[in-house]
Amino acid sequence: MSDMLPSDESREEQEQQSAAARRYREASAERKEIEAKLAAGVQYPDSPERIASRVNRLLERGGVPPAAAVASVHAEALDVPEALERVIGLTKDLQPWSFLPRGARAAATVARISILRNGLERPHGTGFLVSPRLLLTNHHVLPNAQSARRCFLEFNAQVTVENAPDATIRFEFDPDTFFTADEHLD
Image (cartoon, rainbow, N blue to C red; front, side, top):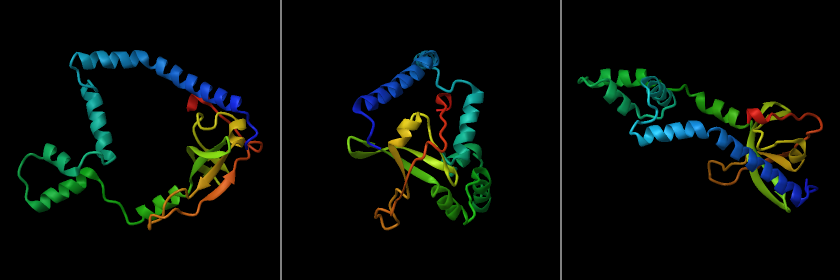
């Protein structure tokens, strides 16, 4: 894992920084348009459709307290049973008890990707299993097979219910078996 020279590491970091700067430049026209609208006093998002879309996303993801949503939608006085029914129906935030074990099962597929640099292990990113032997992560985390050879996976990189470090399960990458990367899908 430590066979990469420091110049290779800095070159890889410079390539990642250049790619981030390019994406920033590519978005500059849209960013300037938004800044001009904000300066003119137009609140972003500026169209009723965008506002409605944002409100729907917030409600679906639980980003707005149900009480606030109910207060704005139902201004008329309601007795308590009707109000509670409307809160439940509006927010759709009830989950079956199996939600927690299903979440734990999904979390077990997530791994921390760490990199060995100058003899030190440093967290570098995350990925998740899409099959028993195939991990998916972002291009900027593992842009090429050479960088994958310097990294390793740690499953269970978390703390327990008692707030103690959990026992991690470590794996090394095998990019010679399979590795693919697509910068545009980063």
